[in-house]
Length: 142
Image (cartoon, rainbow, N blue to C red; front, side):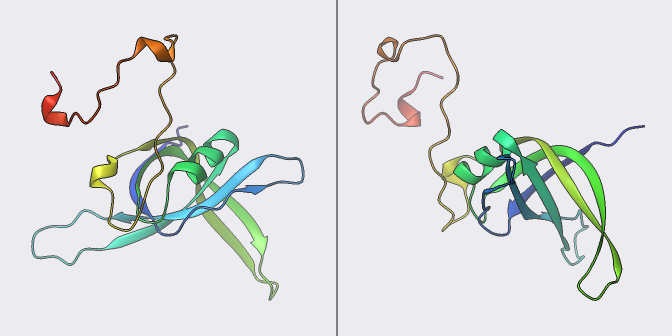
């Protein structure tokens, strides 16, 4: 059996980091994902609930804000519960295993600031790098 979900969508609100009584980080949020549509058809959007745990939750809450485009790889999970009226309900959500940036800060939605992304891990020392000063992308050799 196979349960794999890959989504790209925009956060509908700022994610909030919470902690379980056992000290495990968790965040729940939703993303807006456009459905495919043909020319002349009305665009439709699905709002999909996502839950992320531990370091993924911390990463999302630190670097993503409402309106940012996010890539998520995970699996669908269902939960059964009773609502406040005693009715049996089933919740469907995607449990995020991997998350990633999908757009650069320059392409991010207006009014949705993103903190600086974390530096890549490297064995190099900070003194091994030269400051580019006010260089723009046009000044770079690649």
